[in-house]
Length: 331
Image (cartoon, rainbow, N blue to C red; front, side, top):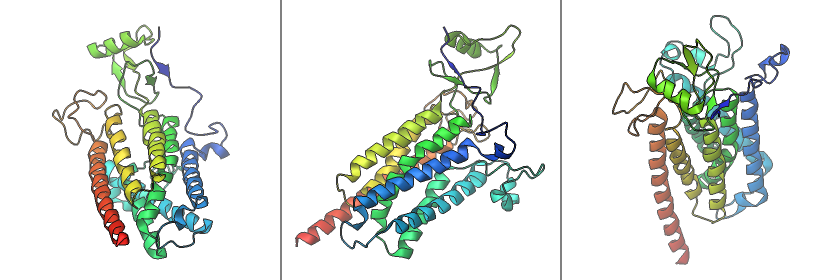
């Protein structure tokens, strides 16, 4: 009995891998378009509900305003995601020495088009936040209310980004023996001479040909875990919260708390970048492809912890401000 899933051989990073002209069209890019389109659709839905024109100091809002707002956020998001990925997660130092390569979509040696491979969620979060703040200040809109709206939209579109990672066969999880473990073609292979590798092979019933020395073991499909929990579940929580008419900013503060909590937990199943390893660890030499201790924390977990604390602080502040406003109105 096989207790694993082979990554579908028909899935390629390109939508049309055998068509020269269309081979530049990739699933990951398409998923970004789906994510941003979904986010825009959600903001339009909020607009139709009258969300932006409710409450004090409301200003008439049009679809053009919503489009301008999300476009500004997306531009800043992409800049932040790319800069953070190249300057924080890349360990070669190439981008610090040659910063023009950060936004250079061609291979430096072969000059082939590669796109901007490498985006950081946390960098995108920071960049997008700056973009939204900039737009609200420039257009004199209530910042907290509009932040409440954008986090709902972001959560709704986020699912597609992680589906793009799965279709790219990247950012997969650690080695596992669960029945839904997936054998990703690009994952690191291990020597059958190691006892723990033999144990995984036996537990999963992994098909190994005679004479095979290196095997590709099943991994947690952590991209799908993230798509469901950090995307769908977070969106449902935020959508329900916005119906409760909380003080402005509360829904926005829930986003980093929910996302940060889900991501922090899922990071125990996702393999950290091997070139970076653990940021905090009881055993710095511990392998990233196995979870040997809950005290070994990845870069993502450290950043998510900061998100959670920041979200809690924001929620407390917005709650206090909301109560003070309510009392002043009663007087």
